[in-house]
Image 1 (cartoon, one colour):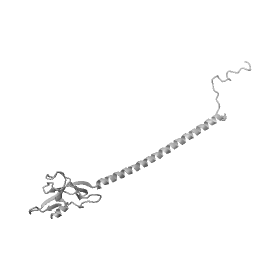
Image 2 (cartoon, helix red, strand yellow):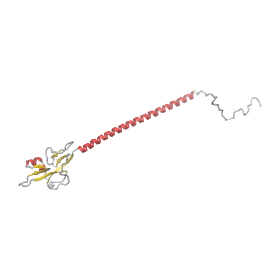
Image 3 (cartoon, rainbow, N blue to C red):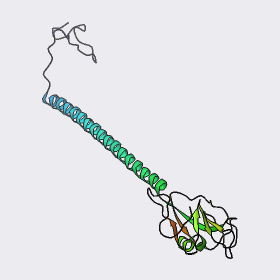
Length: 195
């Protein structure tokens, strides 16, 4: 063996790696490119974290706004519903009254009109209107039917002889028997009579 030749045992095998002992080896200083890559990775992680934080804050802000909007909308819808319900309950109903005889036959509205009754020496009592009979005898009795239908000479169909308390009551001829409204009930205003 010559001095230039190496012993096969001293040479590392081709394709094999050399290992450093971690206890005795000193780490090498990172290159400029490695330092820049690490700094860029740190910046990228920081920017990604900041973007996620901003996105989360925006989503929370939108959710808060949506909840406030829905709550406000619910209050508005609730208030409108309450006012509408109050109006339906308090709004006067419109009812047409027809004048009838004691047996329920429809007659001219004049027989139940206050002015007509007083000018013909009649009177009201217990929801009935009494007019003197032509030629004497027992007075004739009349009263309003509220909400019934039919024509003069026919018996009234439907309705009630009890005056609705919260209603505007008009006759077919157009006179007002009672004006209903918010908090107004009963009583006569202007022409019309009966009870």
